[in-house]
Structures are given as structure tokens and as C-alpha cells.
Length: 307
Image (cartoon, rainbow, N blue to C red; front, top):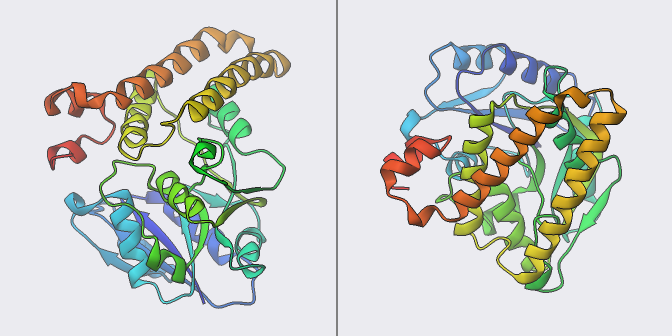
């Protein structure tokens, strides 16, 4: 059995679209949907039940990206665990089959993640981000030693992932991080000798529409996780990030030109600077009192509980 675990809060029409896309999948294995709802007030639990999901409800203050997904995994009955989000929609009826297939080839694969394609409503900088991070070519990510751990080798996404249940029992998601539990998890399994597979044929439609302030807050939280989990903490990892940042910036300008969106350049520059500033401030979050962190973060409730 395959268990699809979805954390939910006020999913609305997004959740309906997500679940309908799951039901459209063509796959021989039995599939169950496990929804962990953290305090919805829009009727999401009832909608999910009507669409065939097993629904478990927790108080909103108990939500944590890692803890909630661990709970969903514990409640699931399948031996293959698939994680997605309420605002991610399978692009076709082959998504699930493509996502789980690499797990059936070898026990050395700890997890598989698939491609994200931006929604039509995404801003140009968001659209470019997804194209840069989730390209059309498959790859296998491995590390030989800690110096090879960097943001490229550890990239992973629980918006569109599959993990064997047996492995998640050994390597549970960290429950003390504000976000990016998926990246921290991939770091640990890679250092333990496993590999990660990127399967671009497993496509979900997914993107966010952040304001410039929202982008700062999102990347502040990402920086907090990077600091706490020692990701990117070696000279080699910092060098990889610098090279990728230059490649990203040049590529984004070229992409804006090529797609006729050059008028977006001033906004895009401000947006990317906000992301960079958020990341750097987040990595130095220990300099600030909790009252300031709450204002800088996209998830202030994390800091209200002690951070």
C-alpha cells in the first residue's frame, strides 16, 4: 500500500484540487490518503473525508513541519510513504507511479522527489526559481564525505516526495526545526550512505506568491534551519553556494530578457535581495531576542513556543 500524507490547514479549494488529482492516478497498488489537519476553520476536514481521506485533527499550536509529517507517517498503513502539500496538484495521472518507481529498484535509495512546475499565477521571479531548482533531467544525489554536503547534494522536497516507511522509522524528520525538515533529513541519510533520486517525470503544479517582505521572512526561516542543522557549514559548501548564486543571477536576467519580462527586472532585483538578506539574517538569528525573531519570521508561532 502507498500512503499519501498531507498536512492541512484551511486548504479550501486547493485541497479539493489536490485530492481530486490524487484520485486520478493510474497505479496498480492500493492507495490511501492521510490528512493531518491542524485547526482548519473552513471545513477542510469534512471535505477531505468526503473525498476518501483518513483525517486526523491536532490543535494548531501542535503543528510543526517535521513533527506533523512524522505523525502522519505513524498513522499511515502503507509501506511506501508519499508526502505532498494541500496546494500541490499532480500534473497528470502518471505522477504517483513515476514518484515511487525508483524505490523499487534498490534499497540504497532513501527517498525520491519530483519536479515542481509553477502555476500560471506565479510571479516571474518565482517562476524562474522553480525552473532553476527543478529541471527536466533526472539525477542521483550522493555524498562521499561531509565536504560534499551542500545545498545541491541535499536538495529534497516534501511537497513531492516518496520515502520507504522502514527508512523513516530509522531516520525520522527533525521536530525542532522551523522548516526545511526535508533538507535536513536528506543530509542525514546521505551521510549514512544512502542516495536521493530526483525524478522529473513526477510533476506537481506548485508555487507561492510571496511579497518582497514575505520572501524575506520565508528565507529568514530557511537561514534559521541552515544554521541549526549545520547545513552549508563548510568552505566547500559555501563555495558551491557562491557559484550557484552567480549562475542563478545571470540566468535570471537572461530568462527575463528571453521571455519578454525585462520590465520585471527592478522588482526581481528587490525580491532576490530580500531573499538573500533573509537567509543571511536567519543564519545569524542567535544575535536577536525572541521578540525580534517573531517579527522577522514567517512562522512567529514557532518562536512563541520557545523556538
